Image (tube, rainbow, N blue to C red; front, side):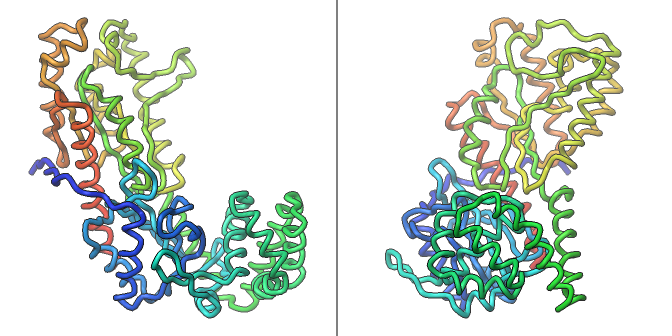
Length: 455
């Protein structure tokens, strides 16, 4: 049974200064102990970082999700889990102007590709209370905060994040003995002292030179102390990485269709800032393919002269389409490293909807087969302007041809399980809002199903 998605009513969005007290109060009522790892200096008015980094105990994870799902006017629209943390994307609150979502990361251990260098219990033991604008919350000790800010990128990612370096360096100088004591257990005295000296001196080359010794010391000491647990942690890390990068569940594809002149590009450009923090990566995906036998790349342009250009030869258009198909699967499976929300402006389905626009001169039966082989989409949104409105924007397209275009797009999108047909003859701002609502509704439904399976 085919079904169109209904659109929810327009909602109000909470600024960060209103969302944060509600979040903290909800955790306190549920008896969940939390610690804000960093970027809390601007609380509650501002969020200095791109997200919230919160430390919890692993046993509280299910209750944390229950609290997030119970917040008024807040919806969980995305969720990913790694070996020692989860990322939850909440719609209904914002920290960045123009955005309507916020990312919250919950850690229960500080680890580097498996082996742990700071546990939640150790951090909570020496955490201190901080007050800010009527809020009371825990923060790590200065030594632990500096280690987290440095090692989360240096040991795990292999790079130095300059944003945190001045504060890290200041702490390494003022609290040298505490920092070395905290680093000694996971890395050993020699590696810990070498890193502290390099950071204190501000020698970036020496700091980067500490990466391999730190990783080697961490893996060695973890293997000697907890051989089975260490091997299990490493295996869990790589399994979680593989699942994140290659699972189809961690990429959402929204295909926005529409005839020439429906304002599709303008609407998509307006959606991107609104969808900031709805996923780790939010991107506009344009279809391109470069053939070794054809000089020009296959790039689709939403322009009034697309129908006037000369079509490729039958063989050339088939080759272009096949390579287009291969490139899309490579992008889907290999060139993605994070949870991705992909807004697709053109897709292989246009081949059978409007082959003239794409210069396709191959057989129709082959186009139908290739269309079914393209990566799937999670929701189809058709921008359906009135024929008169499109005709006024695109004088070169004959009325009969425009009418055929509209009928072809409507007939095709109605065959899809999850689709929405929107009136694009309205003001651009109104159509953009309706498109955003359709996308968020899809994300919320998908995230709800994922959470129901995990918790």
